[in-house]
Image (tube, rainbow, N blue to C red):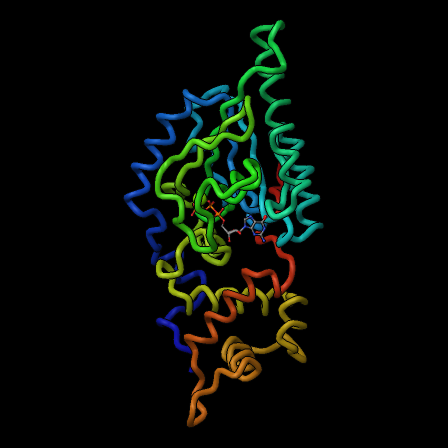
Length: 299
Ligand SMILES: Nc1nc2c(ncn2[C@@H]2O[C@H](COP(=O)(O)OP(=O)(O)OP(=O)(O)O)[C@@H](O)[C@H]2O)c(=O)[nH]1
Ligand SMILES: [Mg+2]
């Protein structure tokens, strides 16, 4: 049997909500808000696989007319067709945005150029004589593990701040110089205090913005397998060499276990191992390019 804690799908979660917001993040949010007035522009980093639910702009609304750039990172893991729809949607919403892949140099170069363009337009509104050489102080914010520190290291061409594959790497703010006129403030990743829907928490767990111990790897992995079965996800089918996706969760998980050598002596499956493999394969992009959400269509 697949080891699951009597869960019957996302409906169960909607009725038994998980607390996605660890209390210690309140302090980080306060700190970010206190620093907003010291910077010229905010760069909010999101994950291109969850363009809306990985956002947190509403939480910093009190910044008023502070220049704000939404950067959707990890585009190399996102479904290009969905990205195109989101680009059109963000443009229609008059948001300043960039879709990037922080592991690609060309992508990184666009950030400072775009931030300068937004800032210049903003400054021109109040002072037409502003100089191009004006200093620029940026602050990077966003959910855990969205790539904030990686972007800063690429921008500054050195390992100025710690970046790694599990959420919660950056523990405190850190100023990093990008060039003579530009500096950027790294901040710890924070969750929105509330999620609109419990399923958003599952998406954020899948992309590893939420640590695995919150949902547990078995629930996150089973959520993904159910998602792929339901959506007949081609990358999942071909990577694990399924003949068909018209199967149930247990059959699918056992198939993956067999293919990946997760059978114990005596023929039992090592489910903990299978769940870790599924999560790692998904997060590496091996199961294909994905976008969990599409733009709202009713406006
Ligand atoms: N595939 C892919 N991986 C990326 C990209 N950008 C960052 N990463 C990886 O994402 C992981 C998290 O990166 P970090 O820069 O530490 O993320 P962070 O937002 O600073 O995380 P916290 O400090 O924990 O909030 C690392 O393993 C990076 O290599 C990207 O564009 N594509
Ligand atoms: Mg970081």
